[in-house]
Length: 492
Image (cartoon, rainbow, N blue to C red; front, side):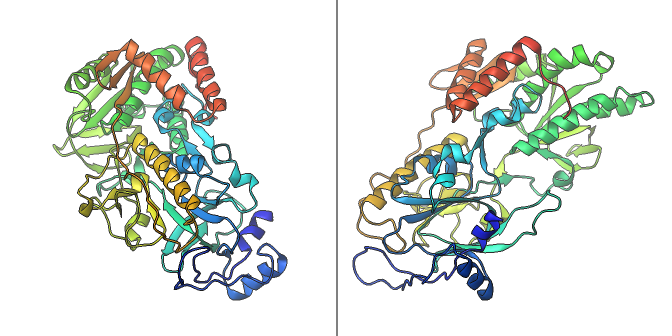
């Protein structure tokens, strides 16, 4: 009821001007004559036909609206100065996913909560500050002139809950950090039959299906052919995610399946399909090491292009048919349909175009960071890769930029004053890491390394990067438990 009242509250969303800015403003701002969270306000909102959060008033903190809780958005919210800003986050999930360790949750090496960081721990203001909120919703449209966004609540997958409703949120600064979506390249059947590996619920689905197939294959009456199909795990995409998942899966088979499912141990196999070289961004010696290591672990490497995906098999460009019981799709990401629909110039590849300071040049007070953004061609810079370290560093940079602007008096809408923004954003690649299973990993830093020492570096580095001490403790305990007792194979 309280959440419903919040989203139904306030709203005379009007065009407004700068608070404390120099010179006349083309926008006029009028304050509501009553509290925005009162019953009277809610009733007035219903009569006008929409709900929402109205514009900030004179003397109030400026409002930063962040769309998304990925690496970029979460880092920005962590570093934003809440003494000068109210933070409103709009996202269909209330947590950040530590994606480098997501593959480990699919086979029980880690538990799911170990890689999910609640937003309230990243930025406590969204649960404590009177003007800061987390709104479980999706942004559906933006009006840059009015400084408002249209949103719709997210209730999908839940029974006997409220029907989705729409509302508006006014902003002083708007940050797009809504990420990207998995690329299917228009291949028929991918969305219907494959599982992506980008969210916790994807990992949960993979784990449940993998364990279901293991148990079904042990039931009397199943044919040899069907048993082999059920226990054939196919991974499409030879990037870090696909390679790491294949390595985790092969390690799971060697260390756990062959001990606890001895009746079917000779039937379960893993195939990794890649159109070109696996781990193409790594040094050639590391790619060869990964190929050798995966082959030793029993992973079959296939070079080819998927042309069609059917319920129980996929077809390659050479006509080969590969039956599968579990299909995981990890072929990179591209701009989402929402990003494509936005009325902003796009960078090469279709992302939201930004300048050197991560601003959207065609709209005042609008910024974009992470996988949904890319440099415009006019900047002369290349579009950065869709990596966690890129997104995190952009979030950190933009938080400091917005803090600087706020302290200079430009935090409110249409308050663009002459502020030296400082140096433009510059990305320096720190290197890449990937595990290939069996206590082996690749580290491509200033010097390329592979093997057990690299695996130790990989684990140590990611353990220190986990956001909270709580989750670091979870991850360390999960690793120790798996080492001593094996993986949990309960299908819950």
